[in-house]
Image 1 (tube, rainbow, N blue to C red):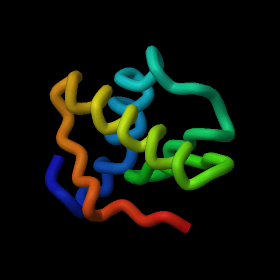
Image 2 (image 1 turned 135 degrees about the vertical axis):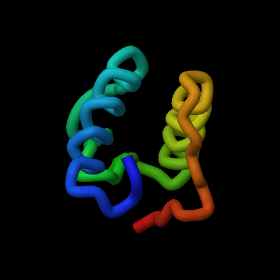
Image 3 (image 1 turned 180 degrees about the vertical axis):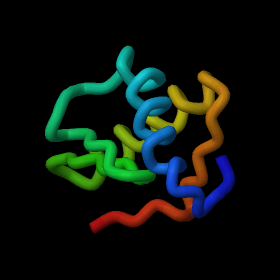
Image 4 (image 1 turned 120 degrees about the horizontal axis):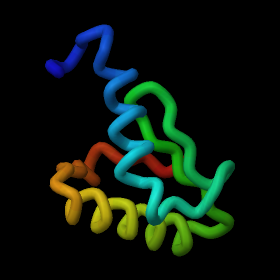
Length: 73
């Protein structure tokens, strides 16, 4: 899928659901939305830990994760 394709968000959610099924904690702590991932944590340290776990698990499955696009709100 190229970026901007109408199918990209759909394919992203299908692939992420399959890849993350093994290590995902549970909703509402991790949400897949369109082509984004939302991770919720009680502290910033917990958030960083969760993001690093997601990154490591995704990269172990052949996905590329770009952390510098990550935003903490």
